[in-house]
Length: 224
Ligand SMILES: Nc1ncnc2c1ncn2[C@@H]1O[C@H](COP(=O)(O)OP(=O)(O)O)[C@@H](O)[C@H]1O
Ligand SMILES: [Mg+2]
Image 1 (spheres, rainbow, N blue to C red):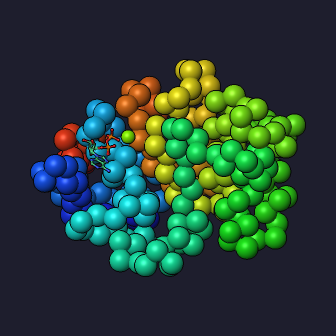
Image 2: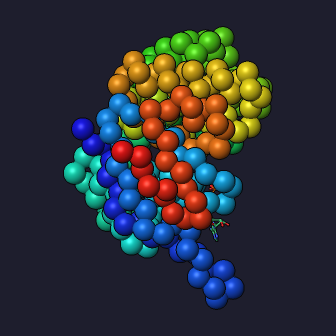
């Protein structure tokens, strides 16, 4: 079953009156329950592709269809709640809100979605990742690995169908990076959700169900 289908994506940036092609006719389908890795060198367009697949950015042409909805044509008013309910996000630099505690950061997407059980669910997730005692800490009181565990809880609190992760272990040492990947995979299998993860780490790519590679804005043909 396909959960995400992208067709003919193009993205250009204009720099000093020159047009740079960052995505060149990228098409991709992602299956339900799949762990897909998007690999490729720095500057090849991985972050741009992930941002467009997840509705954080829009292509100049092409479509991204999720649950029969072409998200590239949704207004931001309709896209934002869709994104918050259907997707979870994990970034390399954590992107926690510095003035909110760990618990408040995790609760945030659930409160946006108007779910009264948010606090309880956020607590349970933090306990599950070993941060039960740290829920009232602010992000600056946490290590990088702890911050990323909080970010994973925040990504999962709305039980998203698809989790998008952009170099989620890029700022962590190998031990903490391994723990983060284990957690993402544990939740993905348990919930039968889909994980789309950008990395240039070969050890992580080796654990994927399937790897596609970006080269200069083109997606290398998927293997059959
Ligand atoms: N806002 C922007 N304006 C101009 N160029 C950009 C912008 N964002 C990304 N780029 C360029 O697009 C290319 C791909 O960037 P990116 O998607 O971040 O690649 P990756 O994540 O694989 O390192 C790079 O050449 C980068 O410089
Ligand atoms: Mg990137």
